[in-house]
Amino acid sequence: MFLPPSQLSPESRLWVYQSDRELTSDEEKFIGEKTIAFLQQWTAHNNELKASYEIRYNRFLVIMVDESHNATGGCSIDKCLHLIQQFEKAMNLSFLNRLLIAYKLDGKIQTISKSKFEEQLHNGVLNENTIVFNNLITSKGELDNAWEVPLEKSWHKVMLATK
Image: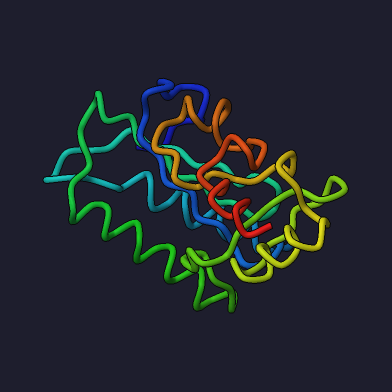
């Protein structure tokens, strides 16, 4: 069952899928339509899931499930992953490349490889105050409080040692 994000609790489980490039408005519309259709019929062990989605910064697809209603399981998560893979194929992009790091620079979202990120840290283009995206968050509450954080307060800080 699809619900607006505001109707899901802060404890709702979520997954953040980061695109390797900015989405066009047509791509966002396509993703939205297909995601709503998927969430309307998404189940776990034949039990409906209360779920929602958001697209943030034309780059991040966030899928949320209120597991206090019904919990997800391996099969239901796999179904969602297949949806993401369909988007990748249809739009020639990657939502599943976990080796890319997204950060804000001059108000714009950039996505680069770990090695290039480390290089930019070393060259002083980026620093401990650079805002990075912690796509390892697991709850809707964390989306607003722990997703966009300064590098020094994120798991990415291990790369500061390369400076």
